[in-house]
Each structure stands twice: as structure tokens, then as C-alpha cells.
Length: 490
Image 1 (cartoon, helix red, strand yellow):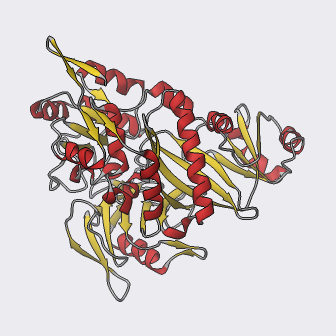
Image 2 (spheres, helix red, strand yellow):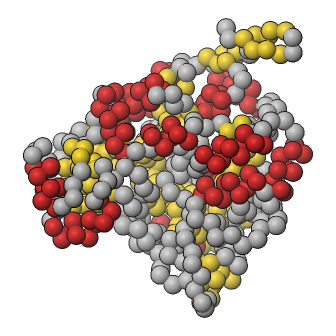
Image 3 (cartoon, one colour):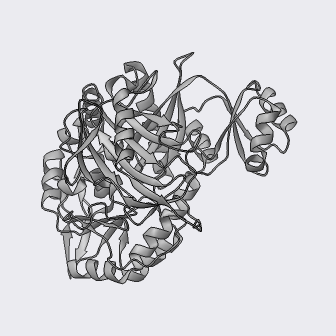
């Protein structure tokens, strides 16, 4: 048994045996834990499971009404260019520092995006950043490194070749020389959803994307007719625990201005067949075990691709972080049967030993996936104009009326109590006084019904989109400010 020092005595570390003791441990937790981010979206609802868990945010979607959400009142105008900048701003903010000091203890800090500056701030202030190092995360975030590690682990990618190309001819020589043909998907190592993947089947396509490709290390893939699924997992000392698979919503112009950009997820039993699910779980676990050898532990998100022509399942992208899919992962039947997946992440960074049967958990969660249905829409502003928001829909529960309109039902803290597809939780991001502009994050809507079928967006989905947008009022501004979307990528 591991030992830890306490004063002059050596005391045995506490060991939690199984899920009931883990659940009880978090229900009585004394350690202050914080999620820091632009909004509380990614881990909203974890406070139901973990005592002393709070959210420190820049955009307070509840305007002070959520008892676990803290936002500094003094917010001078700052032109943020990334979520990392927002998080670092929050950590240094005097009101935030006073709030954390007042609550006592050594704050544990979780977030989606961070950098070396974040790590330095936490060291200065005596906070514990409960995430793998920025250096390790950045290395593993490369699509090239993911491919290499996946191959080593026995989790193959879509047929590909790694290399460089400075001309279209060089690209086709690289691809045809490796049996990939000329209808290609080309990826660069780093970038946000929809901004780093290029579809190239002729020289015209190459000319369109050349400036993003030349000089980069490339993953050149054979283009396949595929279905994509996303899954979150947690690498623990006992093995990799795999969450539920969900399909992506991508590129819908009603939701995002970015071609191929992520704009939501559907979680439902038929997301993968039984055989595909088993293969995908195997790929994720093998990759997770390989990443553990690199020193990685805790939460991550992985995309898998199913070739609809051959039924082969391939490893897609790796996002070594809490992700935009966490909202549904932590509210599924598996989470309520045991504990949310994120709690295993916390256990890896807390001063406690624990024992669980990873094989049993993975099998139970696989079976429970046959009964779960959830969906979320990530709603960005698709239009080019820049306008100041005069009124915005409130955060809380909304209901679809018989005529397709959307009616506000009341303020709620999260979506855990949503029970059917005619009821949804909307989390507002930008509020009155903020700007709506191309790519701006308006909000996130979570419900219990499917938002996408093989024919595209469902009728209910379109009603939700139209209903939320109908509750925005805005006016044109002149001169136009320089604005950039920052809040959410997958």
C-alpha cells in the first residue's frame, strides 16, 4: 500500500474499494476543486456528484443565480484571442483569487485549454493544476503523433502516408506511390475542428488550400465514405475506461460558418453496431494504454471513423483534454449507474488509492449504451454581419410548443433533469451588450432527442435552432470592432 507523510508520522493512504466507496468519497469531499473556463459548460453538473466543486467563469450564463458559478464583477474590455487567455486572465483576477482564498485549502484547477503561462500562474499562486503537462499535451495533440502511437498500439488509422508536399504533383506522387489514389483527405498536425482537414481531389482543390499545407508535416489519407463517432475515455492506473460513443454534427450552415466544423453530437444506441462498438472500444483502450506509457493520465476525447464500404473501424483524431462532448458523457446511464467518467480523472490527481474493475465497468457501460439518447447543439453565429446583442434567450429549460415555437420554462442549473425531446436546456454564452458576429458562440442546447438522421437535421432540431435565434435581438454597429470566436472547439 502506498504511504504518505502527515506531520512526523507515516500514515497509510486511504484506499477506496469499488464504486460505492468512490461515490461516498466524493459526496463528502473536503478538497476545493474548480473548473475554470469561458463558461461552465464542459463539466456542468459535476457539482451534483462532487462536494466543494465550483465553476469559475468569464461569461456568467446565469447572471449570478447559479450557486456554484463564480464570475468576477469587474470585467474591463479585453480583446481575448483564445480560451487560454481567458483562463489565465481569470486565474490572475483579484476577485477570483480572493474568492478561492476565502474558501480555503489548496485549490485544484481543471480546465479545457491551458498553456505554459497557466502552469506558471498556478505555481506562483500555489494552485494545483490537475491536468497532464502542457508539454506532453501539445506533443500528443499532433495528428501525426496520434497516428504513429496508434499504429504502435494496434489502433490503425484510415490508410495513409505521412510526409510533406510543396506542389500538387508532389502530393499525388506521394499518395499514388503508396496506393492511396488521388481522392484525398489531407491533415496538418494542429488546428481547430474544421480548420485543419482538407479534401483534395484535383489541382483546383490544392490551389484553394495550398497556403495551409505547404511547409507542414502532413497526414495524407485515402478518402473513404465514413461515419464518424466521438468517445471520451479516462486513462487510469487500472486501465482505460471508455465512455459512450456519439455521432458528430458537422458543417451545418445553420449552426456553424466553418465547413466541416463541429456543431454538436447525437448519443444514441445505433451510433455504432455491436461489432463496430466492440472494435472501437478495443482501439480506444489500446491507444489509451499506449498513451499511459507516454506519461498521460486522465481525461481525453477520441474520434473513430467507420468505413461504410468495408465496415472497418479506424482511429481518427485525439483531443488530449476535457472536450465539448463531456457534457453528455457525464450524464449518461453509465454515469448514473456508477459515477461520471470525470470522477476517475479526479481520482488520478487526488491523494487517494482506489480499486475498480475496469473490465467490468467497460462491459457494463457498453450494455447501458443500448438505452441512452442525448443530443447537443453548439450554436455559433453563421452570418457575416457584426451586431450588438440587445436581448438574448435566458439560460434554463425551454419547451417546444405544438406550433414549433420555443417557450422558456424556467431557470435551471443544468440539463440533468431534462426528460424528453420536447424539452431542452439552453446555456447562453453571449448576452446583451456582447456582439454577435461570424463564428461567435451564442450558446449550447442539450436535449433527450436525436438532432440528426441520415437525411440531415431533424425537424425538432430545426425548430430548436429557429426558436433560439428568434429570441435574440440585435442592432448593427459602426465602426465594426475586430472580433474573434474563442469559446468552444471540440
